[in-house]
Structures are given as C-alpha cells and as structure tokens.
Amino acid sequence: MSEATLSPNAQKVQDALSQFGLELQVVELAASTRTSQDAAAAIGCDVGQIVKSLVFRGRESHIPILVVASGSNRVNEKTIKALVGEAIEKPDADYVRQRTGFVIGGVPPLGHTEKIRTFIDEDLLQYDEIWAAAGTPNAVFRLNPAILQTITDGTVISVQ
Image (cartoon, rainbow, N blue to C red; front, side, top):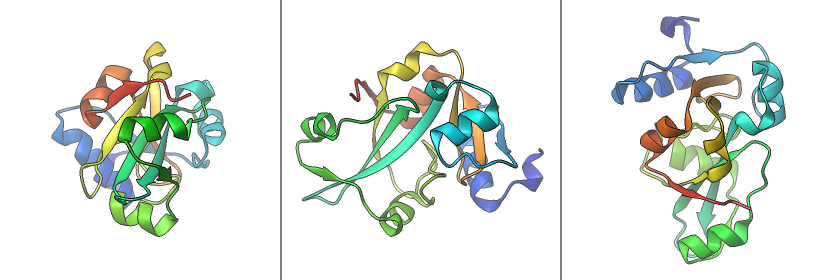
C-alpha cells in the first residue's frame, strides 16, 4: 500500500518514522490488529513479536507512561509503579487519545502529541523482527528492537 493511500493517523505515524530518516513502511491491513493475537494472526508472526503499546497514568501526577511490551507478556503494574515512583492506573480512552493523539488499539510507539516516558519490554530484544501499531486498529509497521529503542528513547526493563 502506498503512503498516499494511508488513513490520516497511519500517515501521521509514517511521517514520524520518516523524521527519523527510517525507511520503514506503515501498512494498513484488512484484518484488525487491535489485540496482540489479532495482529499476530493478520501478520503471520508469533504473538511475542507484537509490540503492545499500553498507556498508564500516574495516579497523583496524571502524567502518561507508555509501556511497549511483547504481545505475549502481561505488564506487572507494581514494577512500573516502582520505576516511576507513584501508583499508576489505566486511563480511559479519552485520556489516551488526548495524550497520545491515537485511539486504544492503534497507539504507536512514536508520533504522540507530547513526549511520553517509555519503558520497553526486554523480551522484545530477542526478536530480529517485531511489529508495532501504526495509528489505527489495523495499521502496523515492521521494525527491529534497536530501532524501537531509538524512536522511543525508552528504558529497557523486565515488565513482569
């Protein structure tokens, strides 16, 4: 699919990738990639290769926190709490859209409306190829863990 035919949010992610000088290509699929399982089935890869973008909010500060985790892992919220120094909570869809510019199920690891502190699941580093959401519940792009670290400026952690 050419860039000219991308939906506006997928194009926003493509533009953000281009700003890094990366020749990564956002693709929009006919099938949903809203969940890790959906994405893995649509792409034809292992669930662990899916970059799951989870937005949390500091309970006191209300600051957004992004955790990009392997699709096969659950994030231990106590781990994130210890790293950020305050309790965290799952925000509602309006908060996610306001702070990232994207809807739940399509939040990419970059291109947000503001800089967001990001943590990267160390389990993603074992793969040569991973897939991340690209702005809509059916848009994705392929990358590698080194590029994920570059585009997010994220801290690699154990999320479990």
